Image 1 (cartoon, rainbow, N blue to C red):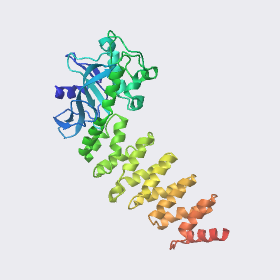
Image 2 (cartoon, rainbow, N blue to C red; image 1 turned 90 degrees about the vertical axis):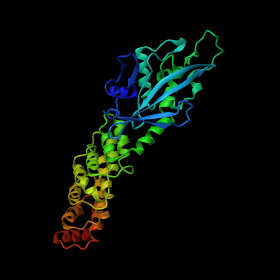
Image 3 (spheres, one colour; image 1 turned 180 degrees about the vertical axis):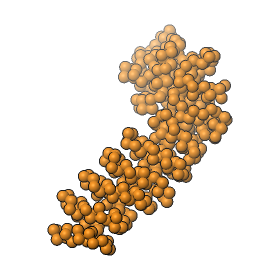
Image 4 (spheres, one colour; image 1 turned 120 degrees about the horizontal axis):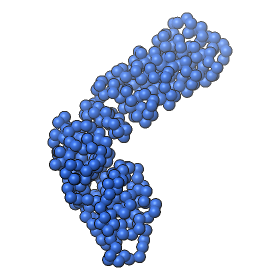
Length: 376
C-alpha cells in the first residue's frame, strides 16, 4: 500500500483515491518512485506511541519521502479522541502530506466528519511552517470556561476556540490541528533532516536543486558545501542560480561555491556579472573572489573592467581583491592607474597606495604616479 501510495502521491496534489481513501499532498521534491522503504527509530520526545519513522528511497538510493503513522489521543476537558493519521515529510523536512486508512476520517466537535474544504484547509495549515501555533501552548487554544455537561462533545474542542487562534486552525478541530502541526514540526522533522543529510552526495544535491519548491532549493544550496565533495557538475549548477532574480537563492549559491583549486570553473562566469547586476550582487561576487585560492585570468580581466564603475565602494572592494591576490601585471595595473585622476580622493589615494608599492616598468603608469605625487 505504501509503495502504491508514493507512486500516486506525485500525481495527485490532494484528493480521495479510487478506493475512497483520504489523502492530501503538496508538491513533491523528487518525481521518483519508491524502490525500497527503510524503518528507523523515531525520537520519543513527542509522546506518540508509534516510534517508527519510514524512509522511502528511489532505485538510485535517494530518499524521496518519509512517513510516520500517528496514533495519539487529542484531549481537552478530560475527554479524549483517538487521532489516527499518517503524516509525510519530503527529504528536506518540509511537510508533504497526510492520509488516513480506508474508512477513517478526521472529525470536529460532536464527531462531525470534515468536509472536503476542511481537509484541504488542514493541509494548508500544516504546510505553514511559520504558523503562530509554534508559540502557543496547548492550553491557549481555547479560553477558560465553566465546567461542561456530559452532552457537550470535545474535538478536542468543546470549549470555544480563542478568536485569535481561528486563523491558524481548522475551525471546530483546533486541538486536532494543533496536535498534527506540532508533530509535523517537532522532533520527527529533525530526524528526517538528519537521515537525509546522511544520504547526501553530489548527485543527490543536484537532484534536490531541481525541486519546484524554493525552500527545497535553499536547503540543497545550504548543503552544497561541507556536506558533499564538490564536483564540476555541481559547481556549474550553482552558477545557474546566480541570476539576480532571487536574491536569497543567489546569495546561497555564491556562498556554496568552492573557493579551492577547482574554482576556475566558475570564476570567469561569476565575474562577468559585475557589469550587469545590482550592487548587492556585485558585492557578493567580489567578496567571493577575494576568498579564492587563485584568481583566474579571465575573472581578473572582468574585475579590471569593474574599476570603471561609478560605485566607489565596488571599486574599493575590487582593489582589495587585487591586493589579496598580489596582482601586479601591467594589463591590470593600467586601469588601476586611471583611478589616479578620479574625483573621488579616497579612490585615487587607494589606487596610488596600491601601485607605489609595486616594482612597475610601464612608462605610462610611472608617469601617472609621478603626476599624482606632485598634486598631493
